[in-house]
Length: 268
Image (cartoon, rainbow, N blue to C red; front, side, top):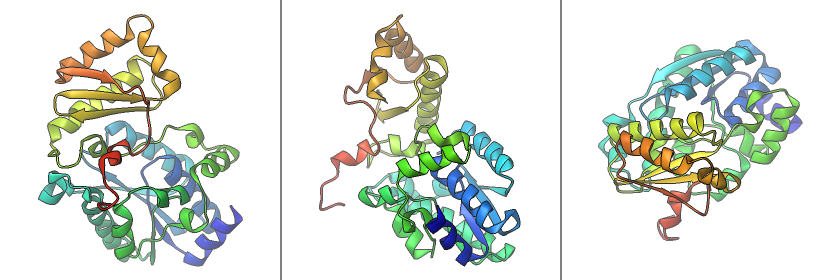
């Protein structure tokens, strides 16, 4: 934590790409403590790739921490390269986001922009990190070598409600590479995940969209919940009403970035 605050203090003023997730909430809190609320601005993107519940969470958290927040509407859907959904999809999305944030930073008088990439992220396939590097975006959590586990522990110590919040990623990450991203698919996925969380109480949920098949990933310890009280058949019927023809449960359970398992080392 001391190492992180030293990094932030050198920035003086910083705009943080803020989603309301575990990492960005912790970074926002640390920046506020290191620099004061007047030197920190949270910018949150609103688009079809994020459900409204996450935007609502981000507003609540920014207010709780006491940092000014700006919500912008990003236009990644206007980019046909994003919609085609290649393995580099996140690059185009982050390029759009960081470009918009850079404009805000210039207008508001902020020299630095920071994202909430953590030290664990260096092990995963993350094309968005190239967009961050090209845009001169700092990653203080990664620089301070803070892992997800450490961030959760420090968040709990700081009294942040996100310390045990399930990991989240944009809805586009539920669609296999090279399958076209559409608003209809994103809507089906978002509603399906809401059903599994709100109706059936699953904490960590991904609904991977393979054409007309919904492949459900939940934490392995929670898979058994599907087979109690008719939850499996009930959930299947609800997802079919949303537009899926077939509903399956992945017996491996949830794992971050499971769509990247199809990528070869050459593509990475």
